[in-house]
Image (cartoon, rainbow, N blue to C red; front, side, top):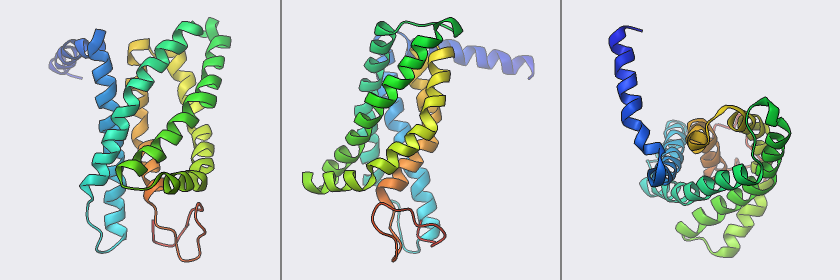
Length: 206
């Protein structure tokens, strides 16, 4: 990279530092979660519009995703602070505690946020509590199995190498693809022979 490019990057890094300090970090984590969840839904809707003639972009759907994402941001912010306090660890020497963090995250935070996602979006979109709970029963285990395939390895890297103030941002950076999947899981249209909760493959409907 040319010297001018490095100088520009250093300037950008210096300008962004205040966003990851003190109270600003909570705002950064909150808005980052919301923006990435909305972006994931936008990516999913763009795919749906190409494959489903007549479908239009649903701004309220993306706005709902943004609001749910913002509601998760503070939870993740304080969740990582709490994990670091009860299971302090640094580098490979702290690997036993880091593995415990990953396990606690998968057993506690992941299912809790999954429930929050389906019930929260259902409330924003006018579903009754019974309807949201039924959707949760239909889709939760599919969500949770996918979660185990993606996040343990990502969180291992997070807890091993990422400084605490950047942990939510790191997760947000990885989560665009995950949020696209969540949007698919929430809003997919089952094929004519696909039971609720099953993925329709090769039908052209997703």
